[in-house]
Length: 217
Ligand code: PRP
Image 1 (cartoon, rainbow, N blue to C red):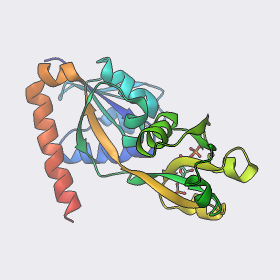
Image 2: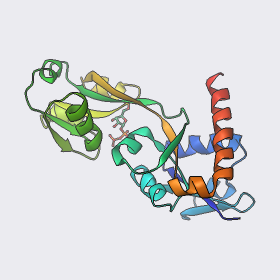
Image 3: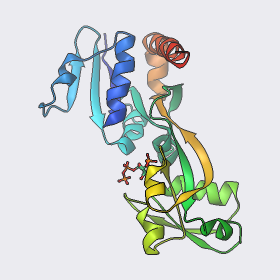
């Protein structure tokens, strides 16, 4: 039997995703060793391999078939816009993609002026402002601590993830518009879906059942 390879976005999401996979009998002993420098892990009994990657790279691995399956946030899926099937909402890592800024920026947003938007998600920001709001903006790509941008005058607003809202609150910013709700999703390579139809469909069915049970608790 051929191995099925699962790519997981590094960090909190991977841990929670492995917990859910554990509930449907998919686990990987090797991954629990915190000191290991290994990059790829195997469960021989299940004929499955697992690896952790930077979130943004997960859709790339899956599109090219280097991983059959990926588990990654909807934010990354939207931003990367790769050819793949999005099959399950794992309902973990829930948050929102928002336009945020100081309260005074609310007026600017509807004013028709060209405002500057700082973000780690230029594709999502562009799609939102150009295709949904039909508003011309200047998008400035940053790589982190996005909330700094309006504070130091780099941009009028930001497009960023809001989870608890505390980063915004503690910096005198607020949600001005909500773009899309986010959570972790399972994605599948389009060829793997056909070639490994039986195994992957079972995995999807089992996952959906476990998630529904979790959602009803
Ligand atoms: C994310 C996001 C916000 C923050 C939101 O940043 O970009 O800054 O979390 O969470 P909150 O609403 O619960 O405060 P992350 O911690 O991933 O780091 P980054 O700033 O380097 O992107």
